[in-house]
Length: 423
Length: 123
Image 1 (cartoon, rainbow over the protein chains, first blue to last red):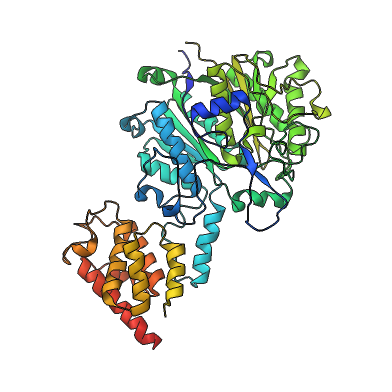
Image 2 (cartoon, rainbow over the protein chains, first blue to last red):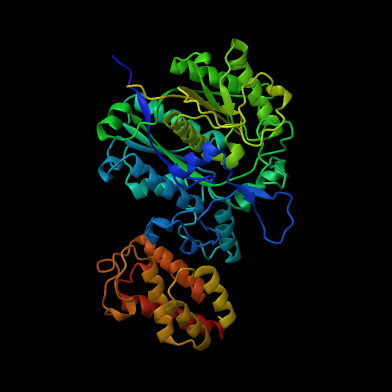
């Protein structure tokens, strides 16, 4: 019996480098950055000066009725009233996704269509709603306060909106969440439980969601938008935050083909492993990540030397990037493999729980469009990277097989292996 | 006591996206305490949260219009409406009383009473 083949058959983007697949592709190809100067608290002289901004959106209002989004999307109050800002972003990305994948309403509500989501919830709205309860001494509780704020808000809202019936799940593995969601979606399809899974990740972009990371000194204090996010560089000093949403359809190949959906890549396999080391920091030797890479390669039945491109997690933190470089050495350099490695976070900033979905979608674009994006802002590679193939400019090379890795708090490491669709 | 300044603050913070007719009525109610303005505010809030909007403002519909059967009010619509009405008018709406309200007239009558009782208690 032939094993089921799983593919990526639709994409949707609301990111700092573009709100459409066309814009994102152009930004990746030309290494156009989405990072700009930003005031987390107007008037306060905070040490963090830049983020990956979202264009054409305004979600500064605490009321959904005050939000603005790009022309062309029509959402009713009924849909928005239970959402956080990143719910709006995810809704826009999902609308793109459904159109791109040529999914009908009947496809979405089929018994074998699932929805896997991830976000950190909305710290800003949680604060607002809890303040209302405290200030009224418990007399006033916003009715939609829970469903619009807690981790899970994306699954609650999108599942109801699209009428999902196959399965609904949320992932809370921090910055590895949506990569893990894609992995489990792959398994559900291979096990024959689901025909397709919409994987959607999103994050707010505001002081509460991003600046909070300064508490552990994880954010770059470099005020220069063109140099702050510099993965693998000797002078990196932290990540640059961003918000937005990304969405993919993970689907049984025969189902996507039958519908005439675009097939961007085949998802050959995935793997995960944990550090067992620290609540926030990566294992400095990258052991868990290296094991996740090897497990993904084994599941995909791919040798290290077959990997043409690695879209790295590399967020531009001193500890994390070094740990990842060691994992790459252990997995690839040690066996004589030298795939091109880049981090697109130099362009986008770090999208936290949706970064995995966003960057897996970037890999799908890279495979389908035939280029490898370089790492922007990389001037002096960290000595720990010596021996890694780190292109600084876009390579006009069509990668056949790609590895995407992600790591999150608690030492969660997840890797995916994708390949150009070869029927 | 809802002052005009307090009403304006609440309009800016909570009535984002509401039509000017409703926000102006809320300001008028804060200034004069008149029932006509109060009714426009209450019905404007209900209309805002309806899943399927009526083409006409609710205050132009018969008072016998039924909340569930005619307007399609679900429990979340009523909870949103109650939360906003309580927040704007400084009243408390009792859950058991709410369940007994079935028409626009009954809703308006109940809230008028709560507002009147609040004013009496405050005095």
